Image 1 (cartoon, protein in one colour):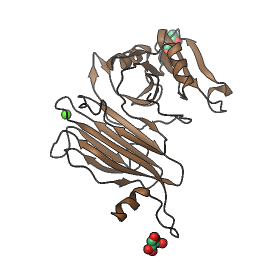
Image 2: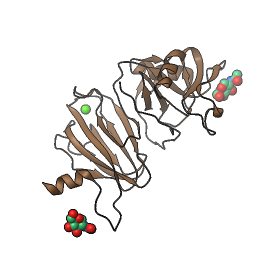
Image 3: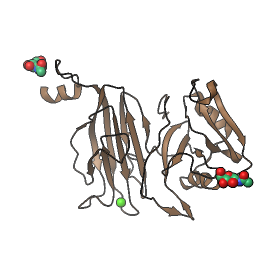
Image 4: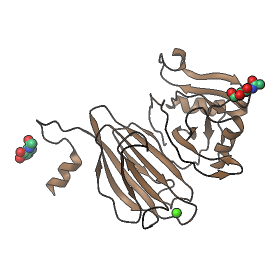
Length: 269
Ligand SMILES: *[C@@H]1O[C@H](CO)[C@@H](O)[C@H](O)[C@H]1NC(C)=O
Ligand SMILES: *[C@@H]1O[C@H](CO)[C@@H](O)[C@H](O)[C@H]1NC(C)=O
Ligand SMILES: [Ca+2]
């Protein structure tokens, strides 16, 4: 079972300024956040609460899924889907799944916080989709160690993918990224398909590299406790994809030796 684990804090907004594809008259620019049991939460890349009911349905359909039903959302909640953002689900209902009671989210309640069936379908919310076959594409990652791979890996990735992985480890830690496999459509300036690393929690600041081709990029260690990876593929030519692993390490203090086991491995070679 693929599960991003218990995500207690999922309230953030991305400042994204450029656009992403139109299809069937609908602007497909949503980003994929958390998922569990085939249910996933998406918000528009314009930010939080930007999707009408029609747009929300189109976002799910675009990826071969549907709006999640109340039961599917509850099943996902039971295995840890906790999202502090209201979204459309089946039949024009709006709500969000809460696992752990908190003052800032869900009015201190646990369960599906249900805003009911909305009469005004032009209201703007996020969306909860259901697609058990959905390929993992991005998310908010808070585990201490984790494998990240291109959608559908080890199969080739598809055209027109955009995935964001926002990694956040404990305060005082850093993120050590190591590439295990890398094959992304080769292009002189990586304008076609690419993987980008940002030494920050968004893709606005902290740009640290853009990669394509089949050469394994070097390890990367973040400055702070957050990092963003962005994968984009254009409308033609795919490749084998990538697999990488990150490991949370305790930041070396000036008085002690390194606590990064991967660095020790390297120096012991
Ligand atoms: C429906 O919601 C939209 C967006 O919030 C708002 O602009 C519009 O005035 C609402 N319509 C009615 C009839 O309340
Ligand atoms: C780190 O440890 C090695 C031996 O384990 C030692 O040679 C080196 O001087 C230490 N470095 C620091 C900065 O303490
Ligand atoms: Ca391509």
